[in-house]
Length: 482
Image (cartoon, rainbow, N blue to C red; front, top):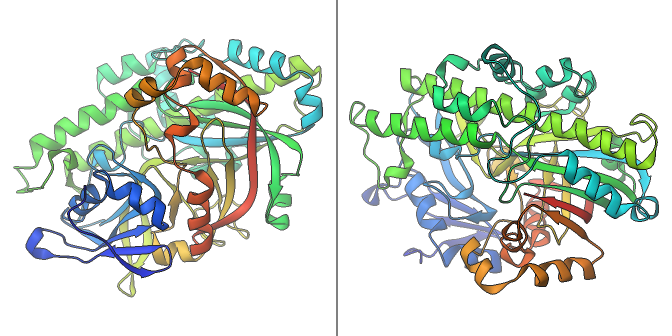
């Protein structure tokens, strides 16, 4: 239970003031409605956000988004910006699944057409896309080929026949973040990476066949090629065991280096190093390598998804108009320009379980959407809706250009296994017209929709604050889990 009750400062906005006596360098800002806030207060979420506010060089405020919940050191659904020259970079502020992210594909197929072959489609997708704990992809990489993936990201996959050049046009960072360095990655991480490229993984990672259920912003939906009643595919995965190992390696490096830089923190899980230090530079280059791996990984899953649709519906992917709408990263830290205390500064924005939500005309947005604003993808649970939003100017004022990354977990996996059975969950999904294929029963039970917050409530907070506003609502009809 949090020992400090946040003060309401505006609708859906709460704050804990900075308190140097308790080590808080900046205030904690929480964006939530009352029920979502109460869920945060029942655990360690707010305490973790207060701890983050004590990191040297943090600016603005320590932010908790409406999907916020307890994580490793930093809360998931947390955003923190550090001065790029005088502040820190923290592996825990990115998390273990570096560039865990979401990408959305659209098609011209109707729900009626897909439902007639839904079980065949989901079964084909399930057999085509490796999933599960430790799952391995079908691509074998040499050391030099792995280096190319880590440097070139999504372009490596496209150059090797896994998609089209215009796919990279609608990825955050165009699917290839510069300055990645494979030499900053450990041998152990490399050994975990090579077999796993092109695999979905387990836990909350998924592939969903969905339909566009509601359109809230006609102009934005048209620009994204999303029409009510048509079928989309949402893919959620990241850098697999590779990213996990990179995080583990650099958490250890950071813990060992803190005494060297006279850094003291209230929680060792916040381990960090100066952004401009040798250790900080090395972590960033390794983290970017893992990010590029994740973009390439999602690209390969996209390719195999398109091939499944081709087989099942006996049409080419161009006939099906299976275009990539967008791809966003959830766990990443990047140097960006933001206005802080009235002046523009270079800051290292840590987004952990948070999605960038830049408004129109930011140069970081791919050219296709730059005059519109950044598409934002917010997945729910496998039995509830997901959303496409559009980044808005208030995100720059309130959250360093960020919004929620999903529904946000409220129930532990252990508790889910205690309270639900595979048959319970599958029946509930079937009653909603959702067909699921999973490698394990735990993959179903641990991800029961009841383990998550109400994604619609999370999205409403973002929409009402004007951080990112509603474009379309998607609902699942077919699900693949590890």
